Length: 334
Image (cartoon, rainbow, N blue to C red):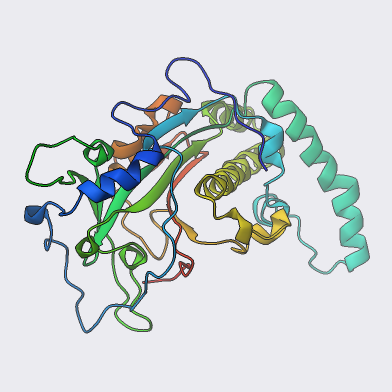
């Protein structure tokens, strides 16, 4: 189990307004006998034949809360455990075996590369250059064709509407692309259709290691210390990815589906767990403008994150994702 993160100042770690305890969902579902008819059937149709045929014979998890929370004061040592050292050493730092023997390469990793990693792991958090923070949340949702409707959690509250049937109020819609061939997969297929009359659950997060990481790297670049810049920049990039991996694991724990996790952290890097984490700009959801929808739902400004005009997250060492709990969810390309 992960250690609990400490809440920061202000409203960090506190539910946003109009959140519900997840235990109210069952009662709300009984009231939600009909979804708001005027908002359904607007989803983009599935062109060129039938959809993927993904079924929904699994149990829908119950989240611990509805809405979003910000969490600060996360122990950098926890994040360090989830750093992918292969990606860091070979991809970011460019230490590759090449023509060396395996024995010589392993000696280089032991004598040169690991000491750099240990030094940065101690130094960067100590001077505030790595300060992990997360905003994440759970929202009721349903698919509608290729669309994913995100409902207002407050409309799940028993008695939230008058006589005539409880109705779910739409907050946002994502429209995801569908494969034209192969299995004809679309992310929306992994969620219960609106026609079933009960909501599914969508998890999302935005994580950052803070603006100090960018500032530390930029200062090294200005000074012309390019080797140290490479080490610091690469470490902070992979630390942000590690934080995303750490928090995805926490979400699986909170949803009660972490029993499918591989016991070794390194196996999590190859998706040895239930579900998938999709970041905008990647093959299954390439439209970067969807970041705007995620930001409206989560408000990552609470942890210092903003969107640039081309939908990139500032500070740089940050990442966001939607999290799909469906047992058959996998990564795919459109």
